[in-house]
Length: 64
Image (cartoon, rainbow, N blue to C red; front, top):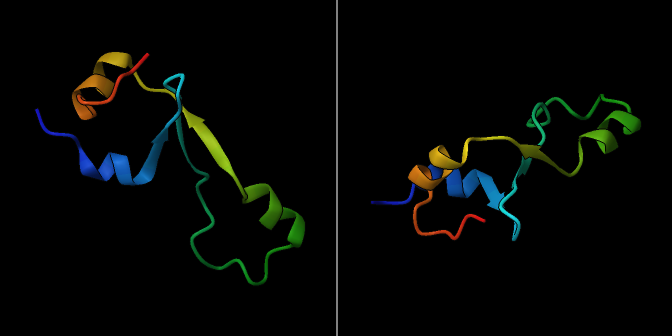
C-alpha cells in the first residue's frame, strides 16, 4: 500500500507515534495581530487519530 503524501507533508510522527502539526489560523493576516497572539500561534499541536487509520495512511512507518 502507498503512503499518503499529503499527510506526510503536513504532519510529523514522533518516536512514540504522536502526530504533530502546525497550529491552525496563522497562514496570513498576521501583520496587524498583537505580538502575544503571534507567539501563541507558534509551535506544534498534537493531533489524535485512530491507529488503524494512521496505519492505512502511513503503512511503512513503525507506529508504536
